[in-house]
Amino acid sequence: MPKLWNETIDAHRQAVREAILDATTELVEAAGLRSVTMSQLAEKAGIGRATLYKYFSDVEAVLLAWHERQVAGHLQQLTEVAHQGGTALERLEAVLGAYADIARRRHGGELAALLHHGEHVTHAERHLEHLLEALLTEGAESGDLRSDVPPAELARYCLHALTAAAGLPSPTAVHRLVTVTLNGLRPAS
Amino acid sequence: MPKLWNETIDAHRQAVREAILDATTELVEAAGLRSVTMSQLAEKAGIGRATLYKYFSDVEAVLLAWHERQVAGHLQQLTEVAHQGGTALERLEAVLGAYADIARRRHGGELAALLHHGEHVTHAERHLEHLLEALLTEGAESGDLRSDVPPAELARYCLHALTAAAGLPSPTAVHRLVTVTLNGLRPAS
Image (cartoon, rainbow over all chains, first blue to last red):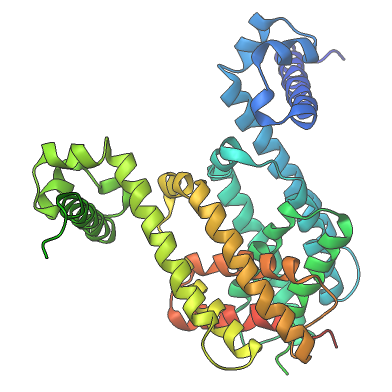
């Protein structure tokens, strides 16, 4: 049975949109956020400029949509890591490690700062805080983690401490940062 | 002996400039960075608008000069705290506490983010990192602090972790954040 015409159109539009955002990833990884132009995007995605403008009004709109997709992907990845097996402490360490890796790859500059002020980021951060709070609560109950500080405050501490990964030279240094951050969460002696 | 005319002029100009920046502090504390206008500044500083424009070309120039003075003041305050008496650990705790208090009072928003991308901030942060590195090295040598992570990395960890103070509801919560951050610096068990 053939698909309904509207569904076919929707699927096509969705595929073109994804191709544009995939092209954005390639351009950003090659030369940074600022380097992306509408002409290059059309060429990379294999579509005409006129078609590209039917999907996005300007390069800022592309970057915002791309960033929303990136953030959603990272959140999904972290959620999966949080639900793997192991103790709360082990899962927390895995989530913090994955988050630090993401933070290390983050692009800098004013444009990145602007994107990071978006509502989608606030929403994702809230989600991630709740994910961490659940693990921190579980770890406090089992005695592996400190219970003298509200889990919400500890979650914020973790996320802020790990943004230090952005300037680190190697994965080994990122691992050390995660170890130090996790050490802050242990029961006070 | 009377002062030279040029020195008198310089002293006068400096006093007017300080009065303008003092007026900026009052306006920022009352209603935030975005609320500051040249008209209000002239009125608060007790000078004419024409005079104000001889000192600063626009409100952005005032805010930048004001922010430079704020940052320099904070850096001086933290340096004094770092050179008080006590063990390296005690002095480190005092510096981190003072820094967290400053971070808590920081103004948010895009304008603040823009000011914080200034060169004077980078310079001050580097200075502060060196201050912390010296205390961290001393603490590692005395065995109070961990020695398995380079002091430069630990200093960055501290500064990032403490930016979490910006969203905290009370001085008690800020104190807890300092305790947790400091706990991360203790020797690994």
